[in-house]
Length: 114
Image (tube, rainbow, N blue to C red; front, side, top):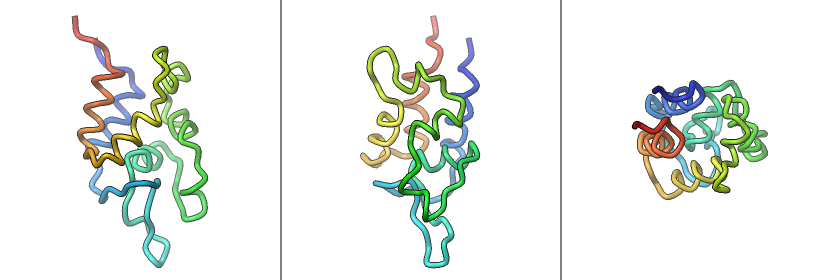
């Protein structure tokens, strides 16, 4: 069995991210408006086409980012009541690396091996 495409997409973005990681918000910007760091949801956001700027980095809805990434609604809030956005940003803000967050996502939402 293989993982769903949406999971591979967001995990690949996290696994391959080279931008510095930030905490507490989607992205940090330099004085000239360039993105200088992102949180895990910020990485996913940019990978899936939701471009961040200083105006929307505070107002973008996390669920919108996941929907744009192709995450099914029944996974955004799963049968156990776990909110995927919270799952991601809580791990980010606990200082888990992007790669470790990708591993946690695969463990929770990936196809279970028999």
